[in-house]
Image (cartoon, rainbow, N blue to C red):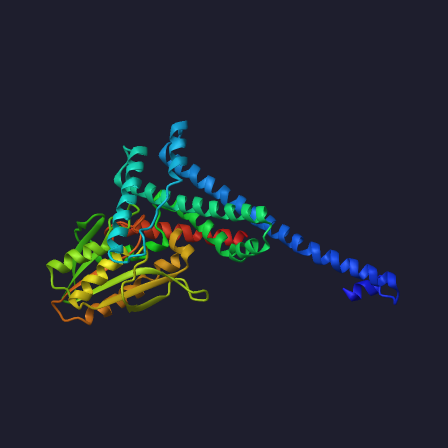
Amino acid sequence: MEILLAQLGLLDNNIYSIVIYAVFFVVLFLFYPRLMLSQIIWKLEKTALVMEEMSDKSKIFLLKQVSKTPDAKTKELINSFFEFFFIPPASLDPMGSVKRLDHLLKNQKNRFNHFVNRMIPKQTDDEKANLTMGLAAGISLYDLAKVIRHFVELAKKTKSIQIAMIIQMQLPLIESMSKSLYKGSMALARGQPIGDGIGPYVAATLIGDKKTVEIEEDVVMAKINVDGRNVFVLKARGPGGRIGAPGKAVEKIIKKTHVTKVITVDAAAKLEGEKTGSVAEGVGVAMGGPGVERSYIENIVTDKDIPLDSVIVKMSQEEAITPMRKSIKDAVPKVLEAVKESIEMEKKGSNIILVGVGNTSGVGDNKKALDKVDEFVEKNEKKILAQKKKK
């Protein structure tokens, strides 16, 4: 600053240069925070508009999944349902919190199912399941856009640079998540396989051509033999977008059968710098979500002193809810090898449960159904690489 003023001849040893320097400094001190606030709000406003546009496009896409030519009433019903909210149970008294949360989640699922049945009563169960998952992702995007809009308006109203900077620091993550939810809502509504479907994919590979039975709501099971061990393979019923209740299914099997081990296979969030599709092994229940189903498994295996093994395929949160990448699908052989090693640790004749955890959107219940998944992943990968090359 002094160099600039010196070049302008304003730092001569006289009273005028001192006064000009002082005024310039005071003006800069007073207006720079406002200028910075204006720049941050402009950026936040721009992001909020983009997110609102994506939310509107997602809503229009889901509306067209309901009807090619929706009437005013259908539009009103969709708009109204996008305001749906979930209030978690009270945490002040933790006793019985899992049962309370499970009860509320069932209510939420019933509300979604009722709405979808009302919108598309003549469609198949899989198509209804896909729309349900698409709506869930669309509502998440809509809620995120509303939160960002709230803080933009709050920063404008209070002229608080602190509020604006807090949101600005989180902006790259928010933008990335909103784009993923936008793509994810369309992929799920279309019934396309997503990254989170790697667990069900592994389960379907192991099931092969075996016949499955529905052991719990939206959960199918097949009993296979792996090197003399009996393995109960579980996954959500596909190819519609479902997660099922694997925890209750595991609990049901253990109560009826002497089980020596439970193995879970799921997608897991990778750290920046880690490779997408890398495989890791550990102990515990590899299962995301609110934790209800995981709690069912942990409680029963603790009571019965059953070991828990887990195999995870690493990917970003964005990759988990968007169409499955080839690097994720290519991890299957390594996962199967890790699963086989875990199974072989038990004696021959042992009963083992393997759960393919995740959203089974686009992933059928046997190996033959996976041909469509492989075909889709290959085409999608070529499309992504072509777009990157074009850019």
